[in-house]
Amino acid sequence: MKISKVETFVLHVPVTRNKIEDSRHQITHWGLVGVILHTDTGLCGYGYTGTHAHLATDQLISHCISETYAPLLIGEVAHDVQRLWAKLCYFPPAQWVGRSGITRLALSAVDIALWDLKAKAAGLPLWRFLGGDSFKKVEAYNTDGGWLNWTIEELVADAKRLTGEGYQGVKIKIGSADPNDDLERIAAVRKAIGLRLKLMVDANGKWDLPTAIQFGRRFKDYDVFWFEEPLWYDDIYGHTVLAQTIDTPIGLGEQLYTLDDFRNFVHARAVHFVQADAVRLGGVTEWWQVADLALAHHLPVAPHIGDMMQVHLHLAIAHPACRLMEYIPWTRDCFVEPATVKDGVFVAPEQPGAGTTLRATALERYGVS
Image (cartoon, rainbow, N blue to C red):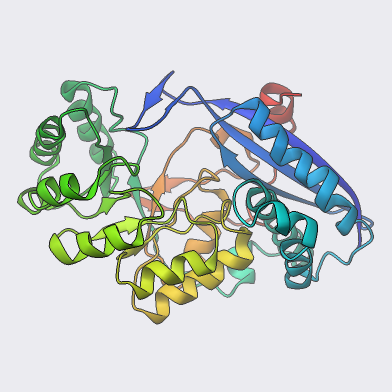
């Protein structure tokens, strides 16, 4: 099965609430920038990365795929995933201009498409191809709520609705101008959902270390399950100090691009929930390496889902370090077999591949040039 054509695409899909905000970002759409790998057998593999739907930067990712990586892929045997990953990852011109960021996002899209092809050729869903347990239950917590631009009343009403639908927990954003406002929001949601359900908070790297220590110490009063991205993403020292100072576990990883980045945080004991994202750190190939790293240190993996759940559902079922995953439904109507939750648990996909195959209507409806 040889690669005969490399086709790129850019989709901009509206978020479900018109506009959402966290401590650093405001977005109205989610971007899927990706690739369709055609083969001489007729099979096609789909892969993509997730963005904030900014056309100029999305085009940079797409251009990297079509102009830098495509010539390295045409004529190659699609089954040789790890060799092709290394060929693209260590390609000197691409490595010279960036070992993270755009080149990594482009590599992620290609690698996911290759794994999609490999599983389709075997006639298996990717989770089963990777040896996953068909009886495993992956718990769903909902992230499509708790946005920082919502009032407390909206926050509480949505948390009640979501947990009433069976979700095992909710995550809310923090990072207000006055951190005391964040504590009020946390207290209100905890009161609304009770003590049995999980409550996560996410600062998106907003706070400095003194603020995170001062207010993070108070999270234990509300039984916060984890404190996500409390500090600037690359601050290993700060996260290490914070982890030693507060009782609430720390989750991070969506802004880390390599196995080495995760290794440095894990060895510094600066992270407790490893939030590896396959669409950012080099695809399925490197995600699996990070998950193995976490497993070796007895740390749980709770994937950050820049892919909006599709490939990560397969990975969460397949890898023993994963037990729960976030749910965000923005792009469900883009896929032939969208990720689905029933009674608070993800339903195992059954179609061959990585779950990334797009509906034709998605390209027509959301595609941008």
